[in-house]
Amino acid sequence: MADISIDDLSSQYFDVLKEIGNIGAGNATTALSTMLGGKVDMSVPKVRLMEFKDVGTTMGGEEQIVAGIYLVVQGDINGSIMFVQKKESAKAMIGKLMGMPSDNPDEFSEMELSALKEIGNIITAAYLNSIATLTNLTIYPSVPDVCIDMAGAILSVPAIEFGTIADKLLLIETDFTDDKDMVGYFILVPDAESYTKILQSLGVM
Image: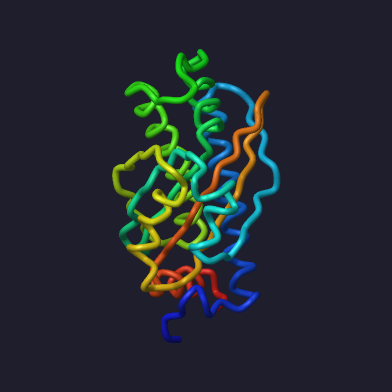
């Protein structure tokens, strides 16, 4: 079958991708629990197929300050993955990892940015590993980049890079909870050929 765009996905294909999102988020939660040294619960992820222009609104508005970890994905699958959190959720997660609250709730120190990058690296790797295991495809993530900015600015990166492939992306909203809610968003943007490979490997194409 010819390559398909995410815009062309039928409900059957989307259900498969939704299940991959659920499993990936579950693995990411397990990795986060290990990293933070305590139990972390996860609500049922909300998996949505949506247009780039609507993602910022979903996160609370394009001017909402968020922390974004961005990785390029290569191998049998090409594209990108982002893990995005509102500033407050990112601060809470960093505080759990470092064992102390932040000295400055408005700014991120170099140490906090390093911790955030490590958190993003671990949980996105767990997410991608679940896809690799399910599909038997080889996936190589790049070294993560971290950025603190308005949601609209951060989301412009995958929009510019992959907007020519499709107008939509796969958004997985996950609520991590221990004593605080720490909402995170996985944004998966494979290219058209990669969608075909994922679905073929799972026997639905």
